[in-house]
Image (tube, helix red, strand yellow):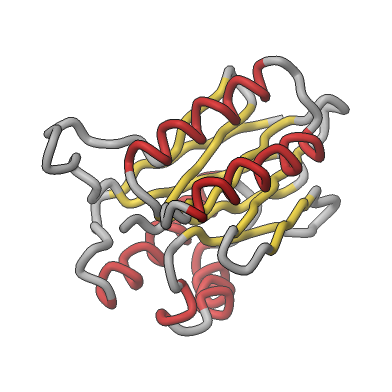
Length: 189
């Protein structure tokens, strides 16, 4: 399993994933749970199996490269994930970046709860979400993240990355399947 946190502000997005997924029984290649699309967009995936994640990542990345609006990608993603969920391959997905209007936007869809979120933070707003199977078992991660923000601040990408690193360490201390080694992605407007 992987733990991914996504934080967005009006001018940047930070994404962090543990890099504990060192491949499967069939390959020793580490898997990318966060895929950069072009210079200004990303796709992040957790849950399911490797083949399902890779298929969905490619599908969403292709739609983004074609310039498909995010709201349309969400609809297509729901249909795609429903098909995978019926095969017991539930994949949590987030994507976003600088949208066609030049604004920061992040989206997520959880096929288990059928919950979708589309967030476009403005001003001092902070949009966030976590991708992890059963993230609630770790306690109130948002409250914990807010406490980390008191230490790190929230104004810069490096401050957000620092808070996400602290959050990842906390989750890894509660779940042996989550690694303490991390990978990060920063996208700026």
